[in-house]
Length: 509
Image 1 (cartoon, helix red, strand yellow):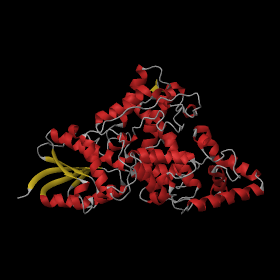
Image 2: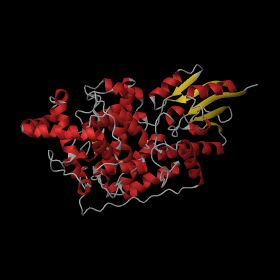
Image 3: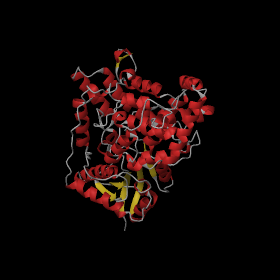
Image 4: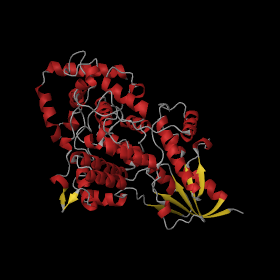
């Protein structure tokens, strides 16, 4: 006779935030929790080894913690899934083995996974993911009421609704955002404190590393010098360390890049937010409380930090679910070039690319300006196929899940959606990179010229991009000045720009 299970709650690796203990409908005696490490996620992409260690350690530790509290735990590990069974096959296996009255899922973060769940022919319930400020339906209603879908407007909507940085019905400091104060570059005299929070590699982590090195031995990256936490306590330690040591100067230097300091003042908590070890509301509430107790925290730092979570992260998720399933096919410019090899091995003479990719490969991390204005910017200027870029970003970063990676790449980095939420392509020449980093100081290319043999590739690729895509972009009001400057250039310089670009792109292809 089959064992009877009243309710089987199925969890995936980014659903650690689900409040099982507070769920009145969940009974520890009659109900079971099935932890699934889906083949659809782990094997379909060349995920960074450190990313896999982080995901597996967090998820398995969560299961162990619930098991110690006498919850009924079932677990499907990737090393046991040699056939790479889908979640549908795994669920069917348990339905045959047990008499299960109902399957319960929390709505998954991945569109394809959601579709697979809907295909399961059994009594089931899909619960709303309450780990975000805004659910999918609310975002859809908000978007339908907008003339233009802009992150800034959505951010203000959530600020008002949740009374965040609002005092006496007015915005704290008299402004909605202080982004103009958050673009300082780092000069030689600026001292940026190195981040020195380290998580020890204990026996639990060593076992996970062994699993990853065995079953994903050919994946990108390595597992040496591993330094992500895997418990909720670790995640809180990470965010509290940031508040105490780096929040004060986070704002003004959040767009800066430094060769000898890959983390600068960034919080490095996105991976903990995206798998559920940290909850957005807890983080934002804690940041405000910390700033109240520490009056030296500038408002531009506090607001800039909150905007990344309350504004951008929530907005990106809303866009993903609003535009799927066709969104992943977006290719506004019809680009079709392959991603260069140096995105995998950082073997390039462009120091900015080298440093950004090296940081990525070494740490499964890079902060948002390295991703957007170096790696994304180059991919756009080089006419790389958006699918190639999506696949790369999804693979290499510990915080990358499709819902957050895809809109950032398609919409923000590549303008591949034609302007669904970005009003212009985020393109920049070597001048911007030189202003916001010290990368150009140790580069063989000259960031001051655009038509010489040793000119920075970003310079001629920038102008080449504008030339090649005039039809699509010339009437964009935010590109008036670049196109106005382009019109003033000498014909011979335009020819050299295109010649340099063609030669360079052929060499890296």
